[in-house]
Each structure stands twice: as structure tokens, then as C-alpha cells.
Amino acid sequence: MSDRWVRAERAWMFEQGDALFLLDARQVLRRMAQQSADLARAVLALYRAPRSRDELLLALSELTGAPIESTDVIDALCDELKRAGAIVRVPSHTPHVQPPAMGRAGLRVVLGITGAVQSSFSPTMASLLMAEGHTVRVCATEESLRFCSAMALTALTHSPVCSSLWDASAYGPAPHIRLAEWADLVLVAPASATTLSRIAQGVCDNPVSAVALATRAPVLLAPSMNVAMLEAPAIARTLETLRLDGHWLIEPTQGHEVALAPSARAPMHGTMPPPHELIPIVRAVVSTGPARRLPHAVSSLASWDARYLAEPDTRPWQSDALDEGLAELLAQHSAPSLRALDVGCGTGLVAAHLASLGCSVTALDGAAAAIAQAQARYPRAHVRWLCADARTVTLDGTFGLVHDRALLHVLAPEDVPLVLARYARWLSDQGTLVISVHSAQAPESLGTTRYTEASLRALLAPLGSVTLCESCTLRGPEATEVPALRAVLTRQG
Ligand SMILES: Cc1cc2nc3c(=O)[nH]c(=O)nc-3n(C[C@H](O)[C@H](O)[C@H](O)COP(=O)(O)O)c2cc1C
Image 1 (cartoon, rainbow, N blue to C red):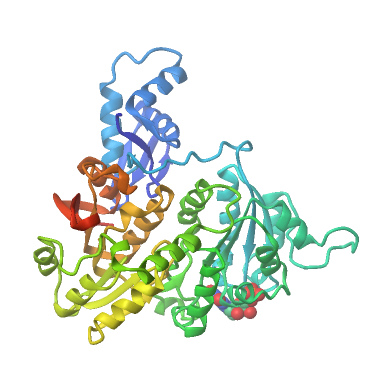
Image 2 (cartoon, rainbow, N blue to C red):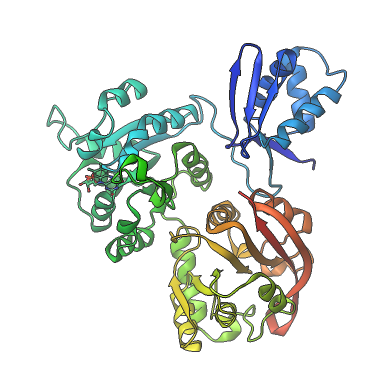
């Protein structure tokens, strides 16, 4: 099937007179005028939904009411838009999620806002959710309304903001219960440290925590706070509890700490991503099914744990020696003190090896039993062992090297974009991702996702440039060698 393309999240446009200016992700300005600008506007509008070239040409001919005679101009324009990063390739086997059409397929979203400074962006958040076709009701803590006005949110959503457990009338269901039942999705963005703790502890003394706890809909929480707060052990425990309770946690990103004077502000980890970056995350969660409150993380991680507690032969992929060729690659891309991350570290072989190369290693696995075994096997290795789910974990800072051996191919397809988005965030600029997955030649009976070189390259392309993609093998059942692919990617943001 031919490639499909879609409007990028990260291209900005502005207009003056007839001219359309496109400022791409690398801050390069491109100017198009008159008919080219009109055509570009039409093409960009059509690419709001993913399309192949043929689908684009068809849609354009429907728009103009005539068949497209010469496709050269359109191809040249599309090439220009691709170069500018205004349209991007849709990875071929990533489940593509159509944004719901305005007012039809949209969900009922409760937007919970709290006393974190990012609440000043709540009007934008509400507007973007509505632009996706969702119906939005806002639920606010008292403190959140210091950062934005209830009136503005009411005007935007055409619904009153729920900021108290007590309605005007004491008859009928309380407002938070009405909202909890009404919601298809609850998004608490930003989620303050206090509100997160309330939800983790089941404290329902304000409408936001009460809705999050009472609803049967999925709950997405976007923690947003000062990095020192985020790193406090109490908050780490809170986030872990929320994860185990089945909430979706959106990893914080870098933002400006308003506690500092404006002139002293530098980007600092801990704030929620800006509203336009939250929208694709909401889409990805929605695509996993509207009524799934518990991400399968909880149950499937329990089953991984059980495998690590059972006999080693239930883990045929496990090996006591590094895969052939991997040692050279790791040596090539590591350096003393380099921050390295081993995702899905199992019993710790690669993490301990990276530590022996002098890297400052963090290793994570969703199975607590795997982490316990890794710690027991390598008691002296300088590794920070974490029991955490790669789909939801929050990690501080970035890494010069991220290693994933055989995690991607066991993920459910809907989880792949979540993990790739984390790799994008965790990798430092020019950092290296080394990844191994089963290839198309691997036996289907293993039940893993089998990648071709093209599909793996397409999947990784948005993260940077793939500098190597080669065949290799991974240990399989009864000491067989399962055909696999190993790719090396250099992160380019
Ligand atoms: C200017 C200012 C900015 C704040 N920003 C944050 C923040 O980003 N994250 C956070 O967790 N708390 C922040 N706080 C503290 C919260 O407002 C405070 O903990 C409050 O009790 C949260 O209550 P709520 O969760 O009920 O909204 C900030 C406070 C002030 C005064």
C-alpha cells in the first residue's frame, strides 16, 4: 500500500496578503503566494486526515469538480510540505486514529483543572478538545480558578463550570456524580500534586478528585509541577499508586517555573505538555477503546511478573550472553558517565553490561520479579533499577543511549505509539536508540509483532534517522534462534 501522509502537529503557518508562510520545526520560513498559497491551503486542509497520494488527488478533484490533469504541481507542493515538516508520513502499521468528525463521533470529555499554573492554558485545552469534535464540560478546583476564569471557560464550552460539590439545588444527583456518569473520558490537565494525592488516596472533597474517582470512564492525568515536587518520594509513591489503580499518566515535559523571576526562567522538567501536544495523546488513549477504564498494563504486567516467578524456561527470550553483535554496538554508542536507559531490562544482563562500560544506567521493567532477580544477579552493578511500566512511567532528564531488546514486539499495537513517544522524549538530541524486534521471518506462533525492515524504519522515522537496520537473531523457545531485526537510530528532534 502506498504511504499515507498527515498534517504534522509541529508546523506553524501565518498569512499576509496573498502569501502563506510556513515556519517549520527547524524554524525555516517558506513563503508561498497566490495560487500556490491557495493550493497549499487546500492540500493542508485535506491532510488533516491521513491520506495517500491517490486519496489526496481524488479529494482535490472532488473539491474542484474536475479530474486533476497535471499532477506535477501537486507533487512538487507535497514535496515542499514534506521537506518543511508540515505533513508527515503515517507509520504503516501504527493503528491510525481518525479524529472524530466535528459534533458527530466526538466523546463527552470532562476537563478537570487544578491549582497548577498550567491552568492558565485551560481555555486553549478546552478549545482544542472541542475542535477535535468532543463535547467538553469543565470541572475546577477552587485554586485552579485563580489561574483562569470560570466565565471564560463557560463562554467557550457553553456549559457552566462545576467548581463545587454543591449545586444550586440539593435535589437530584450531585454535580460530580452527574459529570462522572456523563463522561466518556476524564482528562485532568494540569493535575497538581495536591489533586493527584487526593485521587491516589480516595479523597473526594472537591469536584475534580470526586469525578476522577467516581467515573467508570478512563481517567488521564497530566501531572504538572515544579521538578523538586515531582521528584519528592511522596509524589513518586502517589504516581505509582495512580498507575496501579489503572489511571493513565501523561509524562511531564519541560516548562517554565513561574516561581522564578521572568528573567531567571529556564526550561525545567515537571510541567505538563502544552495543550496541542496533549491532543495526540488523548487520541491515542481514545483509540484503545472508549470504556476501558483499566489499561491492560495492570493485568498484563501481572502475567509478566508470574513468568519471572516461574521456571526460566517460561522465558525463552532470556539469555545469559549478550546477543551477537550487540556488545560492539553498545560499546560504540556508550561512553563513561553517559546516561543510559535499558527498557524492559528483564533480569538485567544489558543494564549490567552498560554499567561495566561506565555508563550511568537506569533499567526498568514492568515485572517486579524481574527487577528483584536483576538486583540479585548484579548486586554490585551501578544501576538504578526501577519497576515501572514503559507506557506510563515518568523519568527525569534525558538519556544519551536507550536500549530496547524485544519489548516493542510484545506490545499491543495501540501501546506502540505510547512507548515510541516516550523514547522520543527520553532520548537526548543526537542520542542513540538501539532496538531489537522479531522480523517477518519469525514464527507467527510466537504471537509477537513481526517487523519488516521497511515497517521498522517507518515506525522509527519520526524519532530521527535510522543509521543501521540489520538482521540478527534473538533467543527463542528451546534455544532456537528467532530471526530478528536490530536498528540503531540517532535522535533528531
Ligand atoms: C503561582 C503558583 C503556581 C503554582 N503552580 C503549581 C503547579 O504548577 N503545580 C502544583 O502542583 N501546584 C502548584 N501550586 C500550588 C497549588 O496551587 C496548591 O498546592 C493548591 O493547594 C493545589 O490545590 P488543588 O489541587 O485543589 O487545585 C502553585 C501555587 C502558586 C501560588
